[in-house]
Image (tube, rainbow, N blue to C red; front, side, top):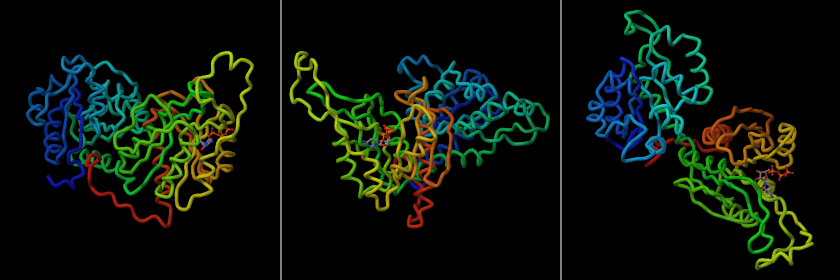
Length: 418
Ligand code: CTP
């Protein structure tokens, strides 16, 4: 298989649910393997009543996974979710589809879906009346709003003998959807990205410091998404408990000054800079080299001096770069976000609510307002940070494409792993 095929060496997790169309998943599996994909199959229990797992094992040359309680892997749902570049559930029954929308995790397939951060495609197959049932219609809408690709089933003769919309989509339609997701992740190729993440620490003495509650998760999610979409990424991170995503050039820093130096030295190289870090606005005017003891601290006044505003400096010094900021706000999000966008002169400002019980700090989910310098306002719903990162990149990509001087970025038909 020539490596120019977009599916070559791509990891596809094929979920098979209990529908009469399960036998068509065998034909689909053959086609995926022929395209060079590496396919792992997860079957629901009812799917195994329609087709024997052995058939999938022979065609995929991999054992079929169907249980959460694997003797060799204590957490198969996490292993599979991490492994997959794309999850394709084909056929997706009404039950599986609704479970994905609601977030049920009562078998291996639904649990993998809940743990996954990669694109998810559902190819439904069910009776026409079920596809049109208001419950299914509402859950399909929810899934699509969340970014899950739900293909439309085809119209024709159904298993019941009736004519209706509910037939398993054509193989070519499903393959196209999978390729589109794989190629979509290459739409940032040619981009050189610097992302800051996490808090900074400003030392008071050798063991004490001023900092904030930022976990770094949003910045790391942006870095991971950018790498997956083909960008070269430098991640400049304050101290966090996270492991750097694979494929980034990772630069750990501690203070705001170190972060400033690390970013500025890479700024001429960059095409996009995102300041997702919660940079300390102030640092102690003095900090002791050793540890001060209790007596020495007693009654001491800590004087603060401002740190450099990295984002505002980047905006002032930019030549060709797109500059994106984050605004951490507790109230009047829109007003403060707009004011900060103007003051820091950025192309996009991502406004976070850090005050509510749903505070962005530390959480795996987030909900933001994306403001552009041209006045566009996009309110996102609450979603996992990795999905939110994809939305932010979609907005940045539009800015990149709107730039007259941007050379046409070609997407080599390679997959994310080559
Ligand atoms: N920022 C920065 N350098 C600083 C402080 C903040 O680059 N010294 C960046 C942050 O990374 C973020 C944006 O500025 O992208 C806004 O940060 P935020 O803390 O919301 O605003 P501040 O400028 O600190 O203003 P305030 O604390 O008054 O809201």
